Image 1 (cartoon, helix red, strand yellow):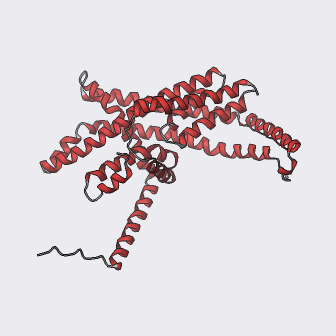
Image 2 (cartoon, helix red, strand yellow; image 1 turned 90 degrees about the vertical axis):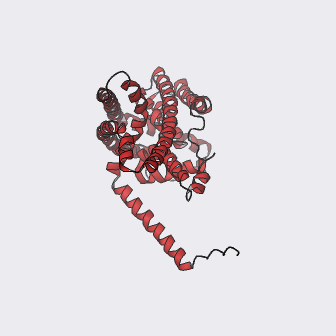
Image 3 (cartoon, helix red, strand yellow; image 1 turned 135 degrees about the vertical axis):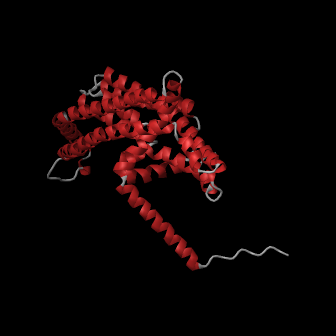
Length: 350
């Protein structure tokens, strides 16, 4: 007997399936958007827990598990809160500098307008307000939201630290709880999948943290050596932006170099600042990251851009920071199931 031919799906069934996908996607988007104040710090704490777990295992060989958790959680909470406070104070100082920076923007723009008028006056249109004043006003408008975001980051750092304590407390108990909740075969399957996720995220984060730290220290030293104010703020910005592929490098170059151009007098120092920051980023992208990171991510560039766009639109800058780890986890989970394995293969470079 020959095998029966597959029954084609009716248009109605396909329409119902498409409608179900749209409904699920809409509900998921709504819930992720509404629950962002809870989920976003939780996911950041999970990422930090992955970074700390190897040190937790190392400390447990020397002290008891509760002491290890207290030490790690206290140290991490102090570092997070200290960094957030230092960045917030730097942003406050930067806000105080805004009037002088606004005058500097207006002066430089006026000089550029006069040069263009002398060389090619046909390119200058008539306007009641000069371009310099428009740019200065724009900088003043941006300062308020940036200051509010810095204050929000200070509060969110405390929430992340609280989540982190409980995650470290529960990490060592997770395998026993899975084995108690599921049959042996199913429990081992879940733990194997969790082990794959753990290995991929830890591999990515260890390499990324090292490369970002090297780049941030180099940029901070270069800014301080050239006399650019808020060098610590630019170093922290460089460290965080390095976790955002493509877009982060542009932001980490434009903001400190733009501030250096506005703060420093015209001459060799603004040019040196631009060249040094560009050289640090080029060396990190060409030498440091390939050496440390290798193929730890395994995602195609198009998937990375799509992930950045999706999570950035959903959760803003913190979403872009989480985009790559979340996508890596999604690919690993989809690769575990036969029905979604082809999608995982399409998303990965391997």
